[in-house]
Length: 133
Figure 1: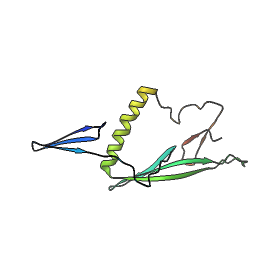
Figure 2 (figure 1 turned 120 degrees about the horizontal axis):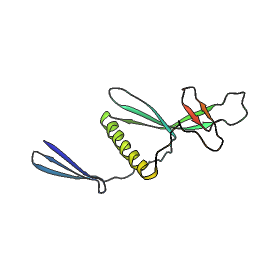
Figure 3 (figure 1 turned 90 degrees about the vertical axis):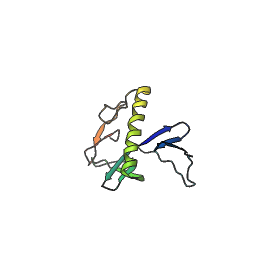
Figure 4 (figure 1 turned 180 degrees about the vertical axis):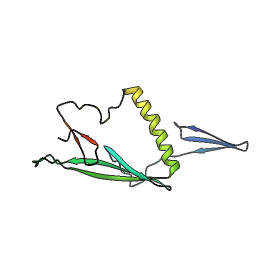
């Protein structure tokens, strides 16, 4: 039987297997070409082998229009995860969103009424895009 214990602060992991305790120290560092990317949304797909998540920003065209507003959705990066890594990410996100909302209050989603005189418009995919009118 295997038992796993993790110490998130020190990134230490202890594993007990067949009565023998093995301890790992996980050192975290950034790759030399590490880049940070701010995203306003994510889209993705999955298959039996992996989960693919693309993170994007929107660039609305606010110039004169003929009644049609265009939004250029630009994908900044894509992350490909194994099913196990996707499950770990889902659990991590779930816990951290709960912690965030406990500390700062509920996160407002697209269903909320915008403030400041902005309007909601619906994109071609049916999703509401706040503030682009």
